[in-house]
Image (cartoon, rainbow over all chains, first blue to last red; front, side, top):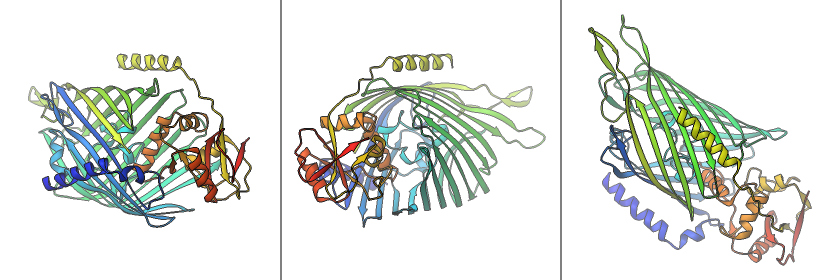
Length: 372
Length: 143
């Protein structure tokens, strides 16, 4: 693993320093490379969360290096390496330092585009661009909706845009194959890291693009089969998304996710809404509210209960420093049970287990992002 | 939650009073001399340059060519034709690149280089400043 990291860093440095960089951008060369770096320093108060400890960490970033080879007018081959560091997150144990995030062949034609290999999963507003810090309002898209560790499809992805007239259009994506699933799950006894493969994956996403305010509304559905030590069965996901720029200089987004099925038994509902106001060409202000409701399945005679596992209120400011780079400062206030250190989910009252009061924490994240 | 709503209200107020100056520049849209097209709407031009459509309204394949990244004319073109600041256009292309989508049009360093590219490429479309020498290319009227 360490060897991979050592290999990636000189490659990134060579890419950034090479005189070929300028000529590779926007020319007719069949080979192109692009890179994105999103690196942060974070410090939590009270409780560690999403890998950010109370003593602060600089070991928090994503870095990508993308290579494209244009084989002919219709076909290209794309490789993308990803370096991901999550500070002190327990999830880091299940996520490699460096991975081949994408490796696919793509053919474009009048019918649409087909990707074969390991390709980004068309899921919601942000999944395909989740590591490109220069286009995100915060360091990462809502953790409640997107998590960490489930981003790609090993198989095939087909996309097509269908004009509907009068400025309306419809984007449809369909995909199938399998995918990696790595999650940090809060249980009554502690945090649990689950890493397995979702097999027989099949999914679809549609976006209706409206002719005003760059507005679009979309829906996503996928299901896959899990066959791991802890779970066996089918899991499904439904995600609704909407995005609009109807208010001048402002983007408003909302997403609602339901994950259900085995995991073991789970039924999780997450919501996120955010607004980004562009005050000047260089300065954005952002606000985001995310939450997750979890159903806790209990053995009879105990009844299943619904618990608000996380509420996250975030504010941020982004300043573009030029040259495709920006700096960002954000603050998150989190309430619930999903921290990196165990907080009790259940407590005893007169011998009966009841849901414990939620814990609170907060963190600051300062980040620098650049991409080309 | 109350703080959140207050913050959103403040943002909306700031945005409402933000300056909305739009650069007005004399920009000429040029295509290859052999291209039969003679006029296009602003939205047609924007669609081609953002690669949302790959063809001219008449049906021929379109190959857009851009100006240098930090040039004044590119900034003016972004605002007046694409309807957003150059930084927002850059963000759009970053999204496209890293989502496995389209790549941005090739960028040329000067009006002369854009003219040379358009002259030698049958489906090319570019934009130049009003003072540029237009020999060998055709200027498209914006309807």
